[in-house]
Length: 95
Image 1 (cartoon, rainbow, N blue to C red):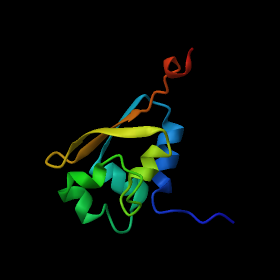
Image 2 (cartoon, helix red, strand yellow; image 1 turned 30 degrees about the vertical axis):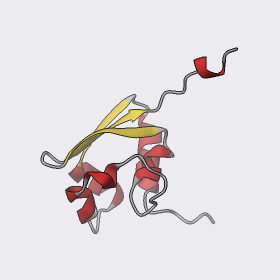
Image 3 (cartoon, one colour; image 1 turned 60 degrees about the vertical axis):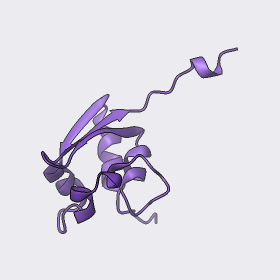
Image 4 (cartoon, rainbow, N blue to C red; image 1 turned 90 degrees about the vertical axis):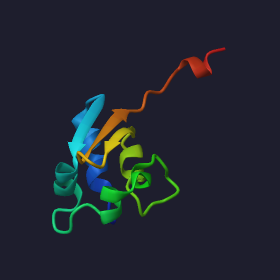
């Protein structure tokens, strides 16, 4: 049995969404990931929590990065986050 990770909910949501851009309010994010406890306080107060950085698993980045998305905009005041699907360019590999 595979153990579920804290941010698997956002990975699953983004993978199944299929959109090139996804906007979620913090409330919607709460409902997906933290229905009993809510989004971590630091996510509501610190833009660094939303950094596209695998090196800090206590933050949510690997959840959206594993789904092939990156955060492109966050508003702590208006409480929303915008994810864009990562685009893989083939031109880098052409000879």
